[in-house]
Image: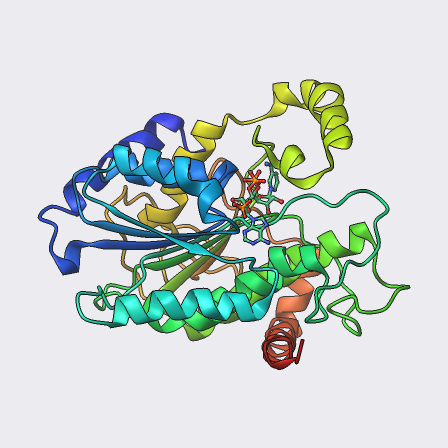
Length: 354
Ligand SMILES: NC(=O)c1ccc[n+]([C@@H]2O[C@H](COP(=O)([O-])OP(=O)(O)OC[C@H]3O[C@@H](n4cnc5c(N)ncnc54)[C@H](OP(=O)(O)O)[C@@H]3O)[C@@H](O)[C@H]2O)c1
């Protein structure tokens, strides 16, 4: 377990990293789902620990007016930072493309940093039990898109910025979902298009396993970027209220959550740990490099190699063992199959006429 003390010490070291606030020392980050829960808490930690320094943080969410209080709070935590809101419903791949275009234009344009240090992704929610496939106009199940396809599109579009981090190899991608819970998947219907293969459980299995496989594949070909798929533990966010209609949310909040609460991680601690995942040298890219947090012993990647560049973490920052199903898929090249399927499906979705 990475102790909370170590996490705090490492995060506190970020203050020295961005001084003076010149371009090479500037931090550029994108939070997809930074308006609430684990994303917001990690963003708060980043703002606090880099206060007074050069930080540009893009925040993607569905409503700028709803996000106003969050933006003011972040600005007061770090008055010199720039928080730029991008309004987008990212269950649609074309909206992901538009959001990425804004980041690419700004960061590649005059005064831009030419890089992206952190891509932190948490969009999504929980499915109402027994609900079937809920297709977006682009033909992807909405939650499957938020948990997997949209996140992969952000990575795909932003890899040029993520790998261009002043040659230090410190671009880092973090997807918060279910790292370590990989299962067998249906290779003949990866996007669970058919009624008889889609179920709540299969949707979980596919989005988790495909995230880990895609990251393992991407780390092999993008050696300057590190990829983390983390399970955050049970965190007391507003996920029930954000996901369920009022009465169902109340049942969870008052009936289910009190039973789960003793096993949960506080939202603030989750944010501190999220920032540690993003900045600790122990989860380095294949080519090494870190962002200025603690250097710790380099972790073992999903491929079993120390410093492998793709990591599955639990909420405490420990590496999860590679499950037998995942190991089998890595050995037989399913990671490449999954990535090629993902690229093809994303291309079709973005071009589909609505
Ligand atoms: N909380 C837990 O105990 C827990 C446990 C395991 C896994 N997870 C996973 O961790 C992730 C984050 O959970 P959380 O508890 O932080 O959830 P949360 O508090 O409900 O936050 C979800 C975020 O996603 C954004 N979002 C949702 N739909 C979106 C859309 N269509 N387009 C753009 N942004 C969208 C929301 O922003 P707007 O509403 O502003 O659009 C919000 O910022 C989820 O994938 C969840 O499944 C959570």
